[in-house]
Amino acid sequence: MGMLLFISGQEIIIIMIVILVLFGADKLPEIVRTMGRGVREVRKATDDIKREFEESTEDIRKDFSDMADSVQKDFTEVKESVQKDVDEVSKNVRHEIDDTAKPIADDINEIAQDLNREMNETAGEINREISKSGKKERETSVTEGNRKKNSASASKEENSIT
Image 1 (tube, helix red, strand yellow):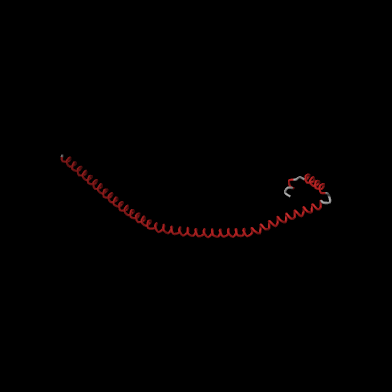
Image 2: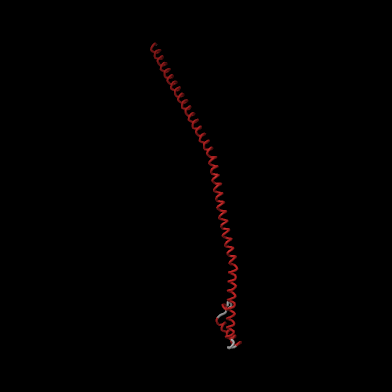
């Protein structure tokens, strides 16, 4: 039949005329019936082959489907197991980091407090030194002022005596 698709209508008519001339009009219905039976047998055989192929591959398709489901299930179980392990390891690492970081943070805070205390003490000492230095300067200026006054008084007295 696939061959008939490539034959035009004129060619089919010519082939029918040749068959009619070769076999005659009285044998033509018998030939057509025989050809019809042949086509029917070919269709029936094709259908039988398709049905048998479907039946024989049904078990294989079922097995394949079962295997795919099993693999999917196994994959899901492995994925969940790995995820559980990763979560557990992650949790343990976080705890270890927290346990390690707490003493370090405490040490840093203690060092910072010590540094603040030392800075405050040093600042206090510097302020005391500045205060002492300022007092000395004031005392020195007062002493110098007194000397100048005394010297000025003495000069006046000398001038007044002369």
